[in-house]
Amino acid sequence: MKEETKKMLWPLWIIAGALPGVVIWLFLIKIGIAGEFAGILVGLGAIMLYRWSGAELKNGRMIAGTAILVVIALVVNHLGYSMDIYNSFAENWYGAAGEEFTFWDSIKTVYEYFLVKNVEGMRSFYIEAGIQGTLCTLLFWIALFIYYKKYDEIENEEKTGKK
Image 1 (tube, rainbow, N blue to C red):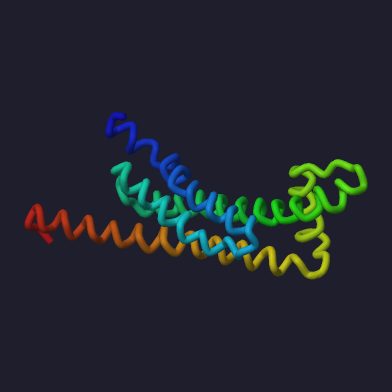
Image 2 (cartoon, helix red, strand yellow):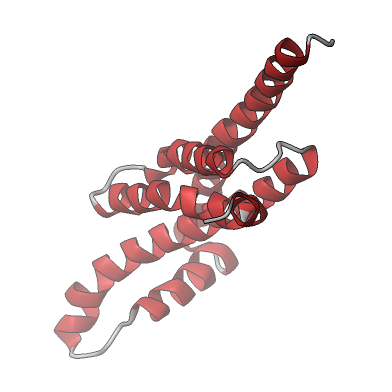
């Protein structure tokens, strides 16, 4: 891949770097552990692939990357709760009654019953997990973005001999 093409695709590298952390996040939820702390791996993977692409470390790109990662974290949080509902109800309740309960049904159920109706006070748990996952993701993304930006400036000063 050409270097210029690689640099131009920086938003895709952020998304691709986040995917391993997303998979781990969902896996942890599947086995019953709070997965939002895997957001650290989402942010770490995103900055590593962004850095690998050679794209410039500009503040505007940091903000755009932040927006991309916030959306990813919130979607993964919703998918995690949806997986939990699907695994709990698809076989035990609906399967026993002979009815079908799809994953799409669980996505809608989480939205309706957790966010809109706040059944059993689940809205606060949902929102807290979303915030924790987002903050863990952004912790590494923003901190390492700033670190690498300063590091590159110092390295450039040493090469050119200018301050």
